[in-house]
Image 1: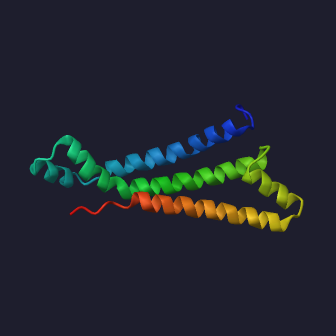
Image 2: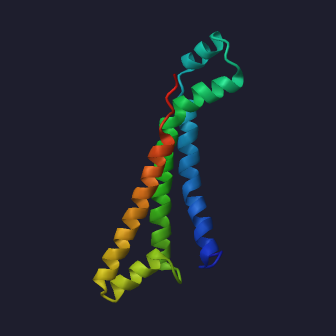
Image 3: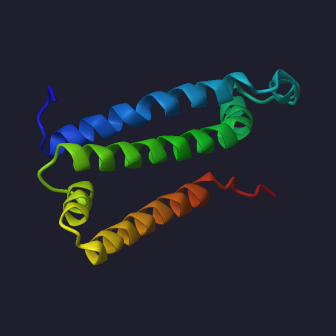
Length: 135
């Protein structure tokens, strides 16, 4: 409410809503790395940059991907609910308006659009999260 009900409020709210779960879970993923992997990399002569890129990031990648999934889910839910309660436009606003005016066909169409958006985000996360095969 401090920043109004325009599009910038949604962007700021979405960023704040996603930042903390993603940051905390990513940090947890990096802290949970088995230090034996790092020692083995150093024993084979890997530099600090190689160790970070090839060992630490690869070891923390599952937790980071889980953090991104949770962050995206919280962001979508939060933005849609915020739009339903205090917005002048957007999918959440249109969904609330359609349900309040008993336009169930429009409400179901908007829900289908939201499902497509969520599925596209999940497929994008899956594609980005796949570790490249190294030969």
